[in-house]
Structures are given as structure tokens and as C-alpha cells.
Length: 221
Image (cartoon, rainbow, N blue to C red; front, side):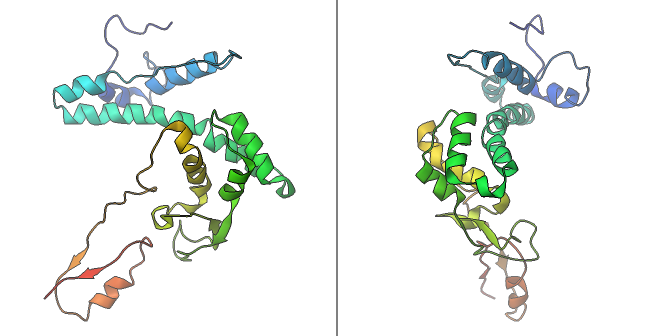
């Protein structure tokens, strides 16, 4: 048990201000979560851990937008932790293997070791499948790879292509996690770009480099 305050701990704004200060007295929610995971992971029978960011509800009750934002950032920083300890570590280990060992069976072994959600070798085959980049653009920092992981659907919304294997793994285990991913790495909500004026400038707008799913809709004059 860790007790760090005689009443309520610091709110999200204070945590944001102090997290870069090495000697901060109260640990952040992420720091406490890391410590709890390290201790509980020693139990060979497994464990059940509840992590709560307790100020979200109370802050929303008061309609305090600024504080709610920092409470969400605090919890979001903590929610990134399980992925860093599973998907990212899995592919980091996989990438360190010799090329001749980077096979579906090995990925299956690593995923089943590093995460609590099992996959089959057949699923690993799909995760490792590649294709010619349908959205290739040599000028683009994210879309500049000629060969990329194969996204079966909604590939236009997964623009950080070097990380797409983690997205594919997330999709594969989503049913086991009871998680539904509504979008890709970016929201599926269209962002409308409206242009009004003479027709001759429109081609210039149409060739501006952007994400592959952008469409320019000319307005009436």
C-alpha cells in the first residue's frame, strides 16, 4: 500500500506541472501503475489490477473543461502503458531476430508470451503480410515506404504505416479484449475543404500533398 497524501492527491493540472520535476513528492498515476504491475507480475497465478483516475467524474460534474482535459491526459498517459508492455515490446523483440527467423510461428510465440491475448499462426500470417504501398508518396514522411503491412480494410486511415503491424495485432485480438475500434489512426469523420472562386485555381488545390483519403469538393461560384 502506498499513501502519498493525507486527503486527496494532486489534481491533473498540478501533476502536469510537476511531472518533469524529478523530486516530485507524489508519483504520477502512470508511475504508480508501473510499480503495481512490476510487483503483481511476480505472482505466477496471475493478478487482477484496477487503475482509476478518480477526478474525471468529479471534474465533469463541475463542468471544469480545463481540469477535465488534464485529468484525461493523465489517464491517457497511463492507458498507453499496457500497449508499451505488449504490442510494442512484441515487435521490438521480433525485429531483433535474424531475418530468417522472422516467421509467423515466432511472432505467435512472442505475442502469446508478451500479451494476455493469444493468436494463432494463421492470424500471425495475416499480421505479417505485406503489399505494394497503395498510397505511396516519396515526399511523405509516413507514406514513403514502397512495401507496407497489408491492411485489409480502411487502409487510407492508417497513415503511420511503419506502425501498422501493431494496428493489425490490435484488430486481431480486439474481440478477445471486447474492444471495438471505430476508426484508424485518424478519425473517420470527413474534414471538408471548401473552395469558392474561379475554376482555374482548383487543379492546384487538388495536387497538394496530403493523406490518401482526402477529396477536394469544389464549391459553386
